[in-house]
Length: 182
Image 1 (cartoon, rainbow, N blue to C red):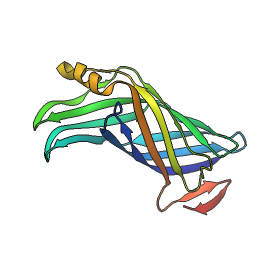
Image 2 (spheres, rainbow, N blue to C red; image 1 turned 135 degrees about the vertical axis):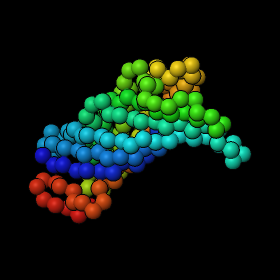
Image 3 (cartoon, rainbow, N blue to C red; image 1 turned 120 degrees about the vertical axis):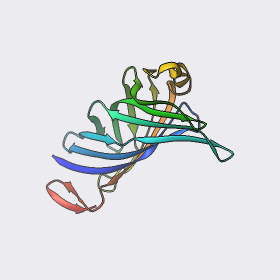
C-alpha cells in the first residue's frame, strides 16, 4: 500500500459571501492502487476570519475545522480523484469592532458536515493538485446570545472548499515501495 503525505493549503467560503476561512494542515493518504481507492488522515490548524471596512477591523473570528472520520476516496479511469470527509467546526473566539463577544470552544456545529471534493482529470499523486467541492454547513450551537446571528451568516448550503495538496517538503513520496523525489 502506497503512502503519501501532503501539505494542505486552501480555503472555505462562507455562504457564498466573500468571507473565506483559510485552511492549512496535512493529509496522509494510504493508496490501494489495484482497487483505485484510498483513505487518509486530515489534520487542519486553526484559522482566522476577518473583515475590515475602511481599514478598521469590524469582525475577527477564530475557527477550528476537525475531521471526524478518515478521508475516503477513489481514482477513476481519467485519474480524477474524488474524496469525502466528515468534519465538525468550532468557533473559538469572536471580536467585533474591538470588543470580544466570546472566547472558548463551546460554539460548534450541532452535527457534522459531509464534504465531497473532486479534482480535474489527470490528477498526479506524486505532484498533488487541487480539489474543490460544495457542501452544506450544519447550524451552530453553544455560541450564547449570538448563536442566531452566526447561523444566519454561516449555516446552510452554498459553502465551498478549495484545497491544494502539495507533497510534503523535504520528504519523499513513497509509491509502490520505491522513492520518488517530492
